[in-house]
Amino acid sequence: MDYIFMTDSDSDLPFALKQELDIPVVYMPYALDGKEYFDDLGQTIDHKSYYDRMRAGAQPVTSALNEEAYLEYFEPILKEHDLLFLAFSSQMSCTIEAVRAAQERLLKKYPERKFIVVDTLSISAPQTILIIKAHEMYRAGKSMEEVAAWVEANRTRSQAWFTVDDLKYLKRGGRISPTAAALGTMLDLKPIIIMSKEGKLASVDKVRGRKKAINYIVDKAVENILDPAEACGIILHADAPEDAQRLKTLLEEKIPGLTIRVEWVGPVIGAHCGPGTLAFCFLGKERPQ
Image (cartoon, rainbow, N blue to C red; front, top):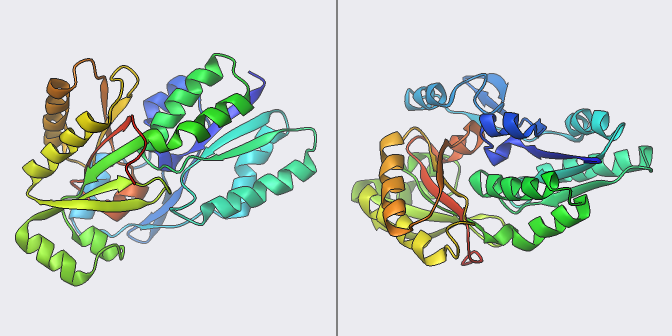
């Protein structure tokens, strides 16, 4: 191919897949116990250790890369190649502004190059699903314009349905009030959260208990998957392997022919949803809202 296909680690792209497909990745920063790290897809701190530390009281903090950091990632590529960059949702962070600023500067410096940035309106596994599908087109020799157009046309078909185990992490991030967190914990209420058409996280329902939350996610997968062979299902968990396997078994029973990967929620996303988070992500109908 005459261009480079690139993304960022807020996709939670599995490291083995990054290696297999040779995809350059921008590593996003976070701090843990006062020390800064970069989300290198579980290489520096493995996912299990990260969530063990959260359960022990560590409170990770995420931050955004600035324009200069993106220049360091992008310029070595632009010197030699055109570039297609699939970015995590612009609605989840101000980071896209730094990406756009770096893009503008580099296109002025290298006017002979093409540099396309696609806002996936996704994060974590919904973004990974778009990466997997788009990279198939890339390997098949499609132009960067064709690949970018496909992602933009299909990005709101990449769905996520998830629930958290402990409401304190949503409270800490300001997504729910302390009163709602206390009441929800007392009643064992589990929120059902999706990725919206706008590229934001939206709470669409709440159920009582983990079992009902898992069954709810399964029902929504059945409702929204159009073609099991196309769905590219990914179960994400934040150190909840038994629940992930239970969810996988139910999905396979309900949706014959569905292929499912089981992967970890990465540290940046995990900082906001906490240990025990469980999700199912897939390519299907348009997001419901």
